Image (cartoon, rainbow, N blue to C red; front, side):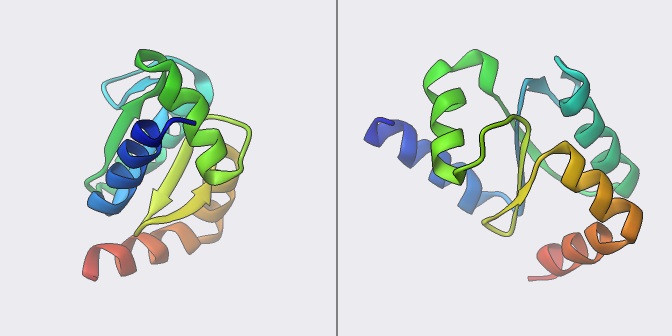
Length: 107
């Protein structure tokens, strides 16, 4: 990963309480897994930002190296990697995602 790509990913993760690297964006997800994440976050009614990895191949590959996680989407809360679609669904169903989001937004 180039230094520029690493810096861009790092800035996005640190500047946004909830950051999602996904295929498409929150208005038009381009895959089912990305759509799952958007639907969950929209249900929670929390502010979040997205980065469309389809628009930048270097970010698409770089975010996988940044998190050491092989798939997209990737969700970061308060600068920490949370996981992808399956993990988000599981945390949401357990009520743990709501807690993590509340803590992040309060800080």
